[in-house]
Length: 458
Image 1 (cartoon, rainbow, N blue to C red):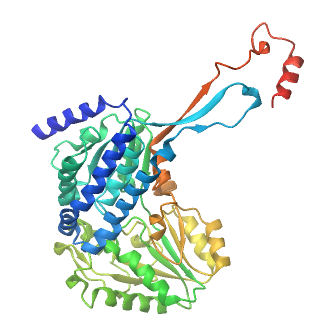
Image 2 (cartoon, one colour):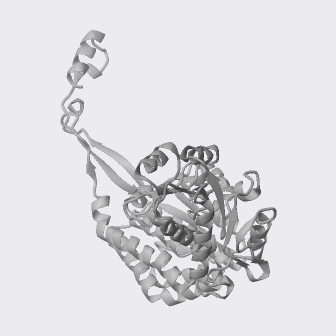
Image 3 (tube, helix red, strand yellow):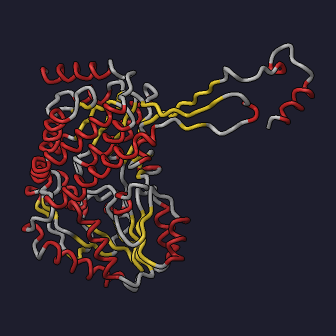
């Protein structure tokens, strides 16, 4: 109870500052604090993720810490340019006026981050929100308890509490934190809770971004470099033991190469993690026992060409390749979010496109094949993003917005897109020097005279 009351007071203190936009100096100080926190607190963060997810230190660094550092440094370089008022174009109908668009922060932002990448998916939207001039309440999933506590400890040391407050993992009433009236809500996580987030935000007309997930397919059709395709799909699938929202969820492979692709994927699993992935320091663990059990149930009634071992009490699920499961099987109906990789043989590219379009719109589509077919995939499917010849790497490009569509979410961020997400673009017009136009005032002139004048000022 004491923890809940203490944090409620912290929220109220932040709320009182909601109409005071952060100055550029304050934004830069906070961003520099995040940068120092990642550099000087690297060891503490890496150890925390090892404890939560058995995530390899190298993986934590390149997938989360380094990516977040790049985001921080991009914001520090470009912030003033992005934030400067933009002049409106000339309009003869508004002769003598001056128009501009001002980038204005929303106020207090709630960032709700998941457990699978608790550093990157917490701090990257936080960096964007602070860069846009907002104050942030960061709520990290308590399922990644060690990382959540490490982030709270480090944030209190490196970033002013007037700018960033991290929800303690032991707050007994998280519902209060999540239903406080914020000015913007940014949620990353599962679709079911995402719907609840959207509903409560709608209660006070609060704008929000939902970064969800879905079944992101990889199409392998007409690919000449099959071994490279297998290598890159395997990396994207088994990164963080498959617990990545944009991981390839399943493969639609040209029938003539489908079994060969399965062999290459199995070989790649052995090369990366050895014959027993549980013994590898480079292979992660499922977040908890119940999630491992769920993945075990998904294997019931399917043919495993490789892997298939599940030891739920140790949170271990092996890299697994499944061949041609029934389309009605649960593994093809729900997001897998684990290291299980189904391969479905197809007879044409159009068959793959049609199959993707029957389901919910995915967060990503991956394609391995010819130029002409790539264009057909881009035009013929609807998804958050498309990547050819690789998996996951499109979301690391600083110039590409990352976000979903439909059931995979809405809104986006990364780079300038993140700044714009957390910014209200306010229209400002100075008409104090505009000429007087008598036609606009009653008593009105004849309609034909009004129309003639309006034609002149188009």
